Length: 553
Ligand SMILES: O=P(O)(O)OC[C@H]1O[C@H](OP(=O)(O)OP(=O)(O)O)[C@H](O)[C@@H]1O
Ligand SMILES: NC(=O)CC[C@H](N)C(=O)O
Ligand SMILES: [Mg+2]
Image 1: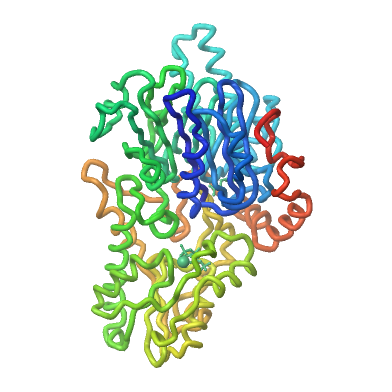
Image 2: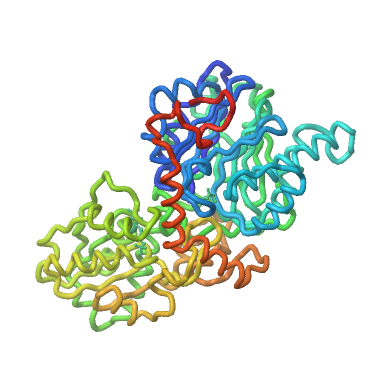
């Protein structure tokens, strides 16, 4: 999962860099491996990207170079290629105009796309799927702008050319993607794949004091005077809130949003006929911040309902033994909301048994199992009296590899717990994810080929219980707005059903396994890190980290 953000300020003399920095900081939970930013100052692009957290990648000197009133930002959690900083984003291609991309998601037809792009003499320089998404966009934009110049009736103007390009990219590129392009001198374009698997929202703010208190809709934005509005697109609404913009709405599945930097006007269009919304259910379970609103649903509210339904299932499944539970303890951070509500519904005390070290980041999205395991112990420590002599019900949002659960159960026992029951607000994860979450192999999953009793043995707990998929889906649908019901989700890692429908056969999964199992990744990363120069010396970087000639260093 990555975090993306795009901003255009009406004032051409203003700099967008600090807003991008702040927005990326708010989206940091979506990607911890690398961060990047590109800005456009008149016709000149400035790029800075590197491995590391936002606060470490952008130093004062870099910020001074990131000039201009329009830009893109990205925080990366790799799902394809390597974690080399050459694959950090935004990525750039020279022709046409000079285009940069920030992408969240994962493409599933990269082999075909690679062949098509190289057959058209487009230069693809990395193993990143996002570079193919960039080149496909550039290729189709070239085609439609040429048609426009030749007076083809279907493409009448620049706006038509942009949307026709989005349609072609959506038809050509399979998989999950929410993406923002910065087209130098033209504007910002954001869109979601035809299933809207990955999230993307937009908002605005007005520079006109007369607009104070106004509620912005797309129509109101389009009626606003020229060069009056600042625009923001971002993976999550929290970024829009934090920057002082007003959230307008989600970009819908198969829809594109274009802001023309010459006129300051915005345009929205549905680009495919067969859009069928199926957002990733794991965003609600784990990825998104609870204070985000996604596809009209409050993530916080959906997690409360997950807790409620989990409590119901515990009562139903263990009518005799659930009385034994003395205390309900969340596994910080993400599980807190559902644990709170589960405790309330079970009528059991809710206690903070684990304290989180606020300086350790999320463990599931860290690369490498050894690092993840060590991080759980560094990240969480027990409040011993909350465990001593008690039967504890631990609540986590999900169990993926079982790294966290395994360590946590041991820690609970070491702290003196008598019985340890483990519950997950999501169903067992038994299938790979191919749309932007790095769960590439079934073999690494603790629930792979195991039933609950075997999983409990593996985790060392007295019993383990999982949410039912139907209950999870209902937890989210329940809070969907009446005029935009959510009836379908990408639930692939729980169900093995892949919503994009194209034939994803055994060969694809074997190849994914070979490329992205933990050992293969570790081997690749060793080679990458021995090639990557120190990020503290950006002036000397020669590995593609600042790949635009004359760009920011
Ligand atoms: O079974 P595993 O492979 O360990 O993965 C699942 C765990 O990882 C995540 O926590 P993480 O530490 O990433 O983030 P959080 O602080 O937001 O809960 C998630 O919330 C689970 O606790
Ligand atoms: N998690 C993501 O969204 C990853 C984006 C892209 N596939 C990459 O690996 O850079
Ligand atoms: Mg967690």
